[in-house]
Image (cartoon, rainbow, N blue to C red; front, side, top):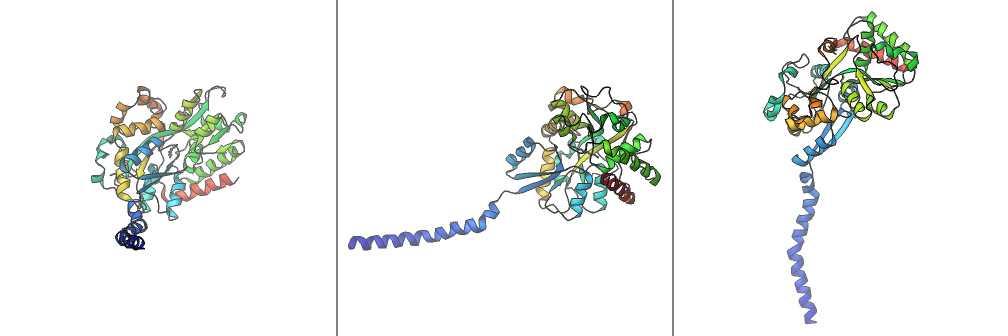
Length: 356
Ligand code: SPD
């Protein structure tokens, strides 16, 4: 009996001692876990643009989670942000879309003090028309649009955009699912600027693409997937994606047709609505480290805007012709520009083409 009551006594003492600790642990799990939860960086970018190595490298070093979501055209990115999407910390619009987003008040100003590696960027890629003081954007990569083709299946090397109207290739090629780029092909074929705002020239380009519609296998921005799978033997394609496809299928070549084409700089920006702006600036600074930036080029196969990154790249990637076309080809390239109100007319024409 005595033994039992002593046990009760000591049990009571134990409870008195540990109940407050139990409450503390419970409270910690209920209230504290949120504070302990890893921060999350949400990236909205082009497919094939942020590798697993870049993603996990940042996660491990900064103790955060990184989520990557993708889009296939600048207009899709704009539509999502304009519709009120607020979760993204990092977005990657191209040149002309940066100027549209600045006008629409969708971008946050970058605090350069948090991005000391900004100094690693070549001045060649700074101060461009779309963001003259780079207050909102840093360059990520650069490239061109052209035709990727499987040289083992396409009888002669394409020289002109007109090959994409050749009935012989019916259902064997794809076009970019991108209104400015694809209208740009028709403008160039007709001898116009890709930035024309002449309604008659736009009408002709629209008719040209409507005429082409029945022989197009697919409109797809991720053309490298179709080329690698052998679903198409030719594709209107961006240079890095053609390069990635060629790495998998060595018979794939890339050409910029004689009529000329578009060139672009894709950038890194922070939306005004970003939930984690500080973390986003850390990420931008990380991307601008030469050794990290070299990994971007090695993965995306687009050009680097950080000259010191080249020291970390194999010689082939430092001067490959897919990335660095010869001077005479460069002269035939145009930058897509924000054409203000006329953009609606491009969109209307594009919708009509796609609806056919
Ligand atoms: N797979 C990555 C594709 C990136 C293409 N950016 C193109 C911009 C065109 N204006």
